[in-house]
Length: 297
Image (cartoon, rainbow, N blue to C red; front, top):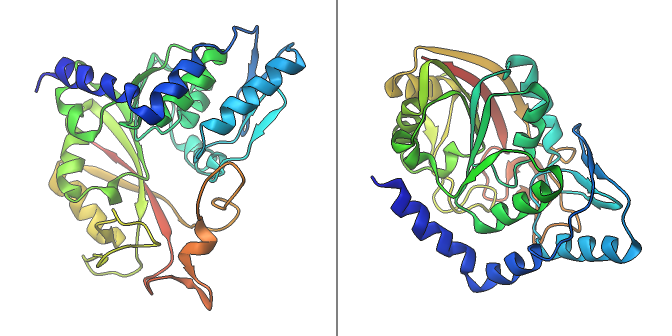
């Protein structure tokens, strides 16, 4: 596969009718001397005029929906659908990124990558095919001015990528793949010898080597293909070539982590669950629960 041809084609996605106007507006955002506090809320501060503040807030509003965050851009607080700090803080005690080559697959607007800057990795590359999320990233990075690289690519391109990584994050992506073992094989091919994969995915309880296969949707999400038991997930990883699989955490999704805010459009977790029994999805499946693992070569 010639990735440069793929890149050229996907650059055209930034000229889609609903994106090109955003890109033009982004180019008009002024350069402002900015300090950045990288914590649970990624906070940007600096001296700006009231007109600049209004312009920045209006543009951030145009970029909805904001799924990952939160961010505070001067006086504008972007209360994203997901409080992504909870996931990052759960995982961060388990990894050391200093001087490592790191990839974030399905990186969305880059929240996790910006958090990773604290650990001073050698390199960070984000992979996500969404031109909207890339535009959100470019908006935030306009002020942070990091050297994070954002590729409009996906899991399937990792094995053809120009370099391998020491650590790969794949958070909330695997259940969107119709061939999870194939996706895990691609992730493995993106790792250097001795590399590690940090992954979370939906799970169901049980000791059997099985996976739930939703008929149409899971929590109203149409592209959820397989929701495995932990045992089944281990088997997928072993089949993909991983040698060591470490269980890090199991966590139910709740309203402290995912909820509707004014910064998204449409529904969120409270709309995805059975109103009479929140232990079930609206379709009658077990409510969302995630398993976090580290798989190494």
